[in-house]
Length: 115
Image 1: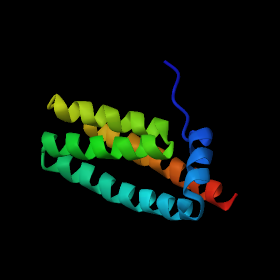
Image 2: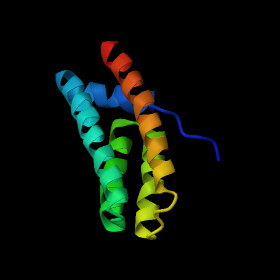
Image 3: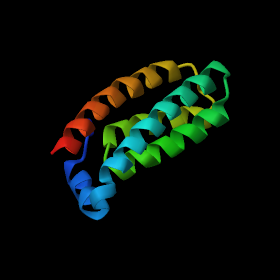
């Protein structure tokens, strides 16, 4: 299975058309919320709270898909599944991947907003 792209430029361009002046606000809100969600994922793992992990990962996945960050959404889906299956052993590695991908997405979104 091919890895999903960091950003879906087509989805972002469409969102930009629809949101117009609010697009940058939406992107900044996504980035800020995502930082909080990553912190919540880490907390859920440290507290061995599989239910909280699944819940946070599920809502994070939705935001990623909505703003056009498919690979980040896929990683969140993996964290969500692990939470639902109560399989937390591999989750720290998934969260590391989420953080790494989030750094890339942040950089790309900031470049996109400048266009």
